[in-house]
Length: 488
Image (cartoon, rainbow, N blue to C red; front, side, top):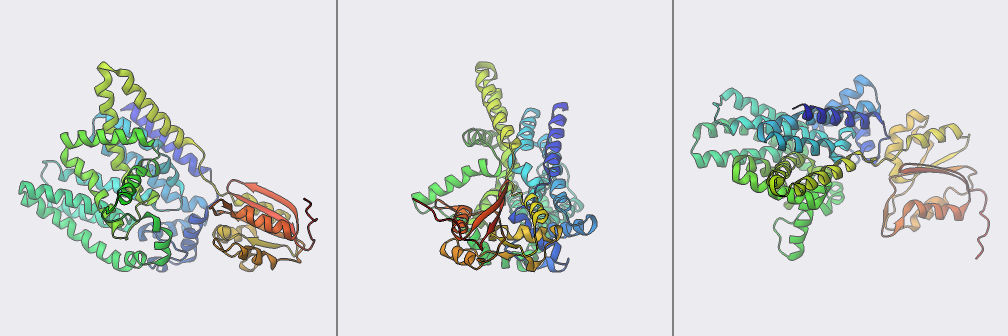
């Protein structure tokens, strides 16, 4: 017990430390933050701008935080931090009710150091909330698995919590559909009509809430061309019809371990299958309860309604961590007598990899120090050209650094017609001082767009200055002076 509380303390400290590092908003955060800061409460109930989507509850809490605490990264990231910290305690509570003490400790260690869970605990996105809502729903549904007497009031309470879950988390619909279906099948098999009736009370509330949410928010989003294009590679075929389809399913499934949980794939896969087998043999209701949301998420992906990828399936992490924890604890127990070193080595390597991944530096696009440098060295008549990937972050920070909408030029996005970049930069010729700001640079097919634009700029003028930060850079050019001729 004391060891578990020590792990919990470390988990909370790591999340708070990451939050207090106060990194710059990157492009995805900035685009959502602009919606939150620019729109009213009522406007946030409608589809968002800049290709963004987030649960209504999350948006309203974020807006309230900005109004009460001021427009800052700390205000915007406070709710995700609270969700991330709460999820540590909820996971521990769930493990204590479902697993052995050993498996609970294993799962808690993996959960606390999971790289994606740490990162999204201080990101202006809803994904830490998705994890928290999933854990809360699993905890509240546990009495439906036991033999204790259930009341109509508890069923109604469960229904209300489910409705709130849908308000704060889009994928909560998969969790509710999964646990509802798993329980309903169990009650039908046992002919437990009373429990089935109580479950229908909660289900009716969920269904009505989801219908409203689907009509108002989710249906427009699922048909949004920007959304579909951005995630086009993340929809799975409904049923594998070829070897390539089957390999795609297998690849995506195993990517869950690395992408959504930050675990070493071979070891995590072994532990998952062992843990799944143990739960299936010993605790079938819990096994189906944990895995049923996965089925509905895959179904939605096959219907081209929900991408099955990365952060969008982070809500599945708690269930997978519980199953993996059972597997690691079982391997340890089985090998304890005859081959103790096998289990010890397996657990140590597993934990070491996870902790190392979780504590490594995280991706940053540090635009703030560059804007500070620009504001300090800016002169009258200077032109600021902003690479399109940096535009959203600049728009969020512009007031802080003395900029207005007309004080800069946003470059064209031309990923598939690179000559347009040169044409765009040609319009800046004749200016003595042109600053060029980069972040969130697109790099693919062997082409780095920052290097490409710098090549064009070096052919148009003379570079006077340059500063770099993590994931961002700024350069000063004299485009009124021809560069010296290059010699072979």
